[in-house]
Image 1 (cartoon, rainbow, N blue to C red):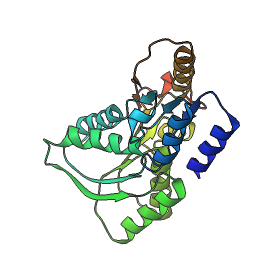
Image 2: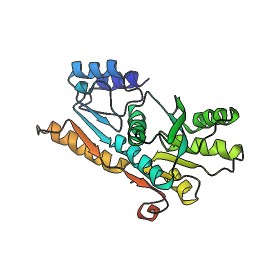
Image 3: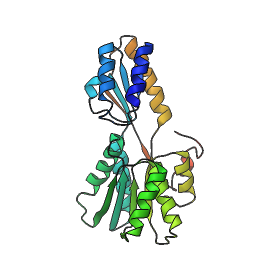
Length: 239
């Protein structure tokens, strides 16, 4: 569907396109069509597979988002069994998981017991987690590829009335995620800054169309939100 929407924009004769890819590889035909039509594409929030087909990628530092969560895990625990749930077709979640795993690589006392692929949605993540619980998998920590995944995990745990202490982590810093951190249900969320990202993407497009030289990649820093620093953030909005 995203390819069809981009083709429609090409036919409308737009000057530029801002793209947040749903499928980082599957969107390639539309990117080739943009190239052939001479329409610049600015890749926002998550990488496309063919970076040569976009003018610039403006993204959160997704790898560091995973690193920050792993460091928090190391600080708060001595060992753990870990469940990971993320969507492999959205490369930003792959990078988050990779940063997390790389940081724990030299710590064999931390074991990934289940890594499920295929969702970034709350309802689906809930079903994934219910399946894990039904199988009797023993775990202490859950990493969700984004906040909706973490919230879906939480919903499943509450539905099953699990009382064992668990550390649930999301990535987004969404208003819903921050509310669950405040209530003690989620341990932390690496906060993206979508408002800053959008401003940077717009300014980059203006600069490019004005003939200025721009960077091929712009990374927006992320910050891990926990109860310790929650008061530094807007609980009801985005960064």
